Length: 319
Ligand code: MEV
Figure 1 (tube, rainbow, N blue to C red):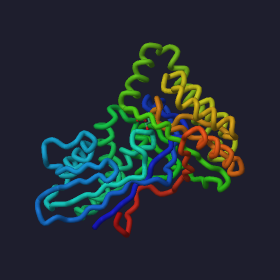
Figure 2 (figure 1 turned 180 degrees about the vertical axis):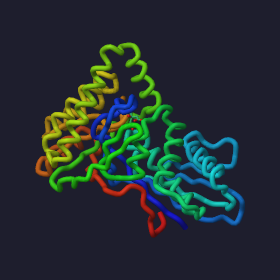
Figure 3 (figure 1 turned 90 degrees about the horizontal axis):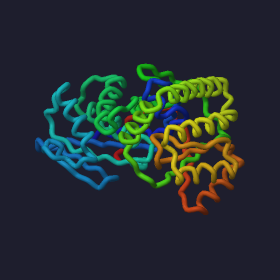
């Protein structure tokens, strides 16, 4: 049995602007999608998703829509390497679905890794990243590639289409990232298309907003590289203002952002596509309890996540 795990992500700065070739900063965090693959006597290629409670034979013409990305990956790998052995793949994930934490990319990365290892072919992380990107295109339409990249390579990454730089820094012990899922699911591809259309309608204004986002991300990169994590708060709030102006901020996520800010966050913003999904706040450890208490009181389930250095990894034991 071959098992692997790939991490979720939190986009710290620059989502959406990255779709139009501006930079963004993203970190891998300690929630994982996992895939275990075992051999079958028969020629079948079975896929079981524990999280989605779905099971399918991916050779069949019609697979459930939520599993279409795995069929796509299977076909790409079959074309390139030839899949001659039957298998059963179990997919499981701690990552909330359709919420902005890169669930689809992490499952794609983990499935790809486990399948290539199962086949015993030689590959590089770059191959995993490229195949997972193809799956992301199927799910999200015009993805920037940031989600599959961070899930493959891990760490804190400064990303631009065609360029990635792992920021070689240690996340401070006394600094926490708190993530709250608004519970509002949305389709990333649709939100991305809406933002691109707004851009086209107001190009002369939007280009300044996109340029401001680029400057903001570059400033954040410099602060991170010089260890000034505690000074990121204002930039997080300015980034939230830019997201508001491109139309991805809604009342439900604003409520969470203000609850975080009023209870000690250095900064808080939407992360990912927005229009629901998750919000993250940056907190000093000693300010955490008050905010967690408040967020729970108003009905949310805050989770504290930690940046992780590693991307996809092979697991020794099964799921
Ligand atoms: C989605 O996680 C982030 C977006 O910027 C889309 C993308 O980069 O593909 C909204």
